[in-house]
Picture 1 (cartoon, one colour):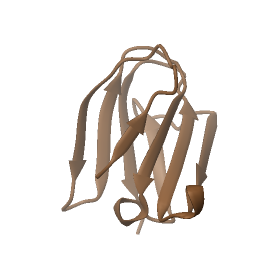
Picture 2 (picture 1 turned 45 degrees about the vertical axis):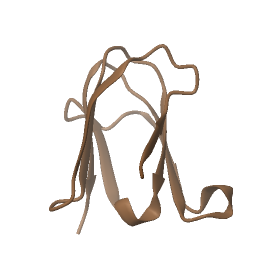
Picture 3 (picture 1 turned 60 degrees about the horizontal axis):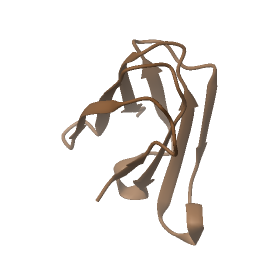
Length: 90
């Protein structure tokens, strides 16, 4: 189970996809408003890159073991609307 939380963000999130073969998470946002994601740790790695339209957002925060459980939190504020990619680094 994967949970994407907008937390009252006016951004609309669409086209959410997780590609298990590569571990890539992708989705689209319609405006540059903050996004907070809560993801089971099994779907993310300790080293990953978050990009919006190929650029790393200026405001980006990631934490593991949120709520005392195996859940990671990724929070970012994109500069533009567009395609978000969360890509593991090997």
